[in-house]
Image 1 (cartoon, rainbow, N blue to C red):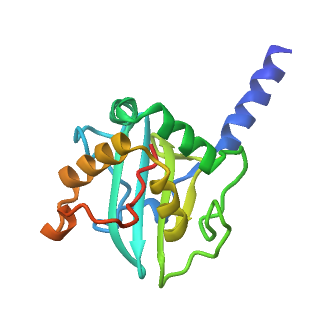
Image 2 (cartoon, rainbow, N blue to C red):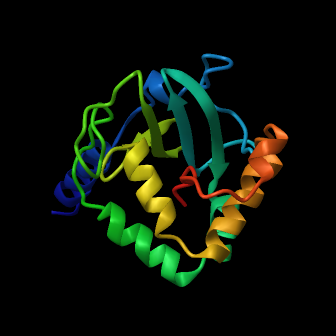
Length: 180
């Protein structure tokens, strides 16, 4: 009986993971991500990858190890975490990177979209993620977050993805999500 249960569980775990698709390889190197953007440590164990595209070009991409993800997550407000969970409504189902997770709009090479996935070593978690969000849904998500959370995510952006000075102006505009 124990052997049967172990075999059953091994099959379930294997179904939850898959090879890392090239969508989640670095645009710069064409290779899988090797280091965390925050601590620069090797990606051993759990980590996430997020990439944003505008008109087919990568706007940013990064991998964040589990420890750094946890640290940043602790800085987000409880209300924002609740809003993210409610907005995304994670369900244990296979995702389709070709459609927006929220509105189901097709992923358009001429528009904006963000993809995010969860990984363990050299395998991608398959249930609930990966996911893709269109620009409109990303904007709606960011608008629902608290000022504290938006400020923390802006700090993350400035530290890792410095841009032109005009991006430092606090203008009303949709901001990009960091799915933490």
